[in-house]
Length: 57
Image (cartoon, rainbow, N blue to C red):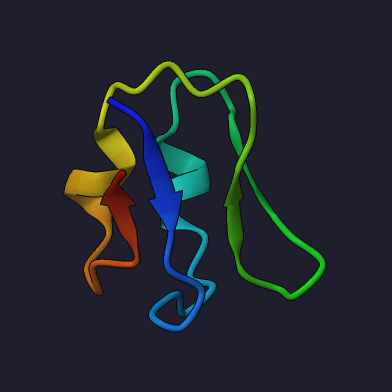
């Protein structure tokens, strides 16, 4: 699964960073989450995001 961050929905709570098993998520220059190339598509961040900011592509 490939995922992306909807920056309009992201609240910068950083929960996704904590749950990512491969540390593929960081805070970008806009202060919102961004998915890096290490992402393995496990979907943990999609399931966790309370505002639906991380979505399947």
